[in-house]
Each structure stands twice: as C-alpha cells, then as structure tokens.
Length: 289
Image 1 (cartoon, one colour):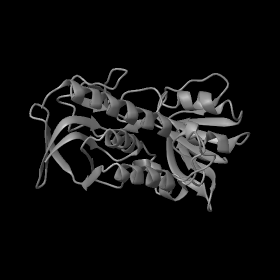
Image 2 (spheres, rainbow, N blue to C red):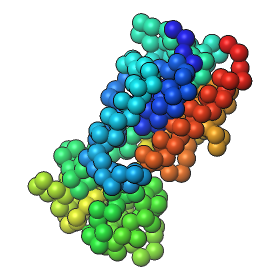
Image 3 (cartoon, one colour):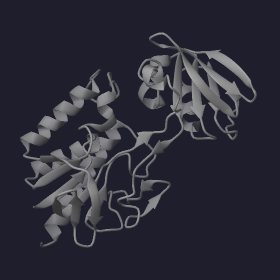
Image 4 (cartoon, rainbow, N blue to C red):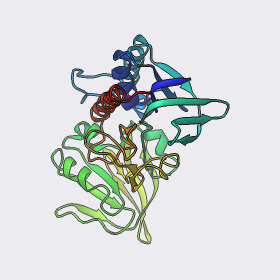
C-alpha cells in the first residue's frame, strides 16, 4: 500500500508526527518493532512536560496513541529489512510498503554501566538523565558516571541543585573545577535495598565503596542507524538535518533523539515530530505523485 507519510518509530516524536499528519487528513502508517512509546513508557513520573504537574510515561503515551487513532493513523508492528530511498520502498519480512514521504523517528537509548544490579535500581535512585530527574536530588549527595567529558553538561546542570557531587570517570579525561573526580573507574555493584545507597567500584587498583543518595549515568546515547547511514548524512551515530528537519533526501525527514541536536527531552521530541510532519505535509502539497 502507498501512504502519504510513513513514520518509523512510535516514541513520542513518532506519535507527535502521527497526530499532526493524521489531523491534516493524510494517510499515515507508523511502523514499530518494539513497544509503543519507546523509553517514555518506562518513566513513572514526568513533571517537566508543560501542562502537567505530574503524569506517568504510560499515561502520556496512551493519550498520544489514542489521538493518533482518532485521526485514523495506522500502526504496524514490523521489523524493517531495508529501505530503497530511490524508489520510496520499505521492505519487511513479508511485505513491501510504499511511501511518498518518510519520517525517521526511531529514537536512541542510553549507554549503560552493564553491571548486574543496574536494572534493579533504575528509577530507584539510578537515572540516565540529569535534566529529567535532577530536581529529585536537591541538596543531596550524588555520583555521576562519565566517560571523558560525556557528562560535562549533566554536571553543570546538577551543580545548580547540589554541591555534593562526585564524578566517576570510566576513562581519564574528565576535568571540572571544584568537583571531586575519580578516574579509570570500573563499577562493580550498586549498593542499596530498594533504593540506591552507594556504589562499589575499582578505582585504579583499589576497591572502594562510596555512599550517595543517587547515581546519574551519562556515558552518552546510542542509536541504530544501519538502515540509513549509507544514504543519509550522519555524524557519530546521529542523523543530520537542517533546522526544519530536512535531510539530504528531499522527501525524508528526521525527528527525535536519533537526530543530531543539543537537547533530548520529551518536549523537544514532540516538537520535532510536529515540525517534521508539517514539513512533510508541505512537501506533499508541492509535489505530484
């Protein structure tokens, strides 16, 4: 089937794009190979999304999903094998999908410490986003994991909330005046019962236990751009767009965390989705298919 707009990814960027495209009366398909909502559905409390003092990720995504359905946006759960950007064709296991315009909103994931106790304490004192969760640790003791300077912006942000910060660099390139920092750190175990109480780590040749109220892991983000990297301009694993989210291919747009940009938040992902969809609609109005 031929669609006006096909969106890859059903995170908040993809859902936002779907809402704007559907309400413009375009035929829209959102393709997802995992859960609807992406990483947003894992968040129990969101208090920095305008208009809501507090909302869960599940509730926010559910509302956006229902909006898409109200505008007759279609969803299909497929794993994409390849994209033919010249012929505007997406190939899956047993299907071929044609598009007039394509919005890529397949998101990104946080790099992890990869230690056994990491999953247990996620959302219980362990966070991957200082801007999202930093306000929970005002005037508390926190540890920030970095690789070289990957966490420099997180540390700058957290310094506005607490003066009790320790940085643990798994490499040896981090430097920030007035911040206690350990280099060449190997994390072993997060300590606590139901909530984080500290971290056990090798620092050089010594094993140490450091107490804290919370841990922020900012080792960067990773994306999966294998489907796109040979055709779309990219840098360090992220796709490059102009300010209106156009790529180097005229009918292909990018929204959300997979895009190279300075701030990755739910609100900016939603903004990206709205802009990308609006630009796709403009493209459709100027071209005859």
